[in-house]
Length: 172
Image (cartoon, rainbow, N blue to C red):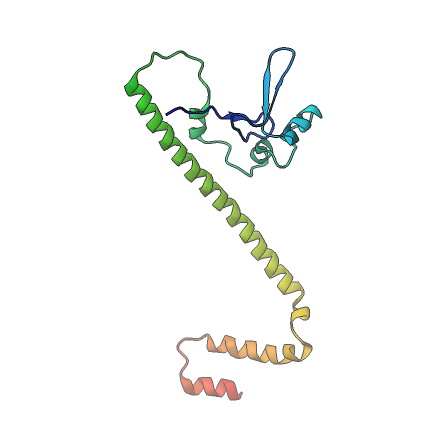
């Protein structure tokens, strides 16, 4: 099995597969790889990836994605030569798979927690709109009957009330 090297786009951090994208080499021999022309043009226009809404850097700086996690320590490059050992290599590959599983699980949990906050805020906003603009929902005739109906509902909330008392409340 031969593995292909998948690079990261310098601007948006997406994957750049072999034969795809653009490679830009600066005068100081620094190599920049871009996944598509959109990223390359933004780089040439000196756009900041942290301020461009569709990039990974923007999502991380603005709290849209998980940024602090011990699993990210494993992704850092280590420029230390290691003597080849088949057993160590196999353990490393197994560990990489496990770390990726853990990272994906934590990222999904982070997204779920973010969505819970939005759901709570939307619910509070809906309640506020309902309380302030009830006149748009109900007809004026229903509000007169609605007050009597609400009073009856509140009286029914007593659990120890027997049926005779309930009939008296309804007949009023």
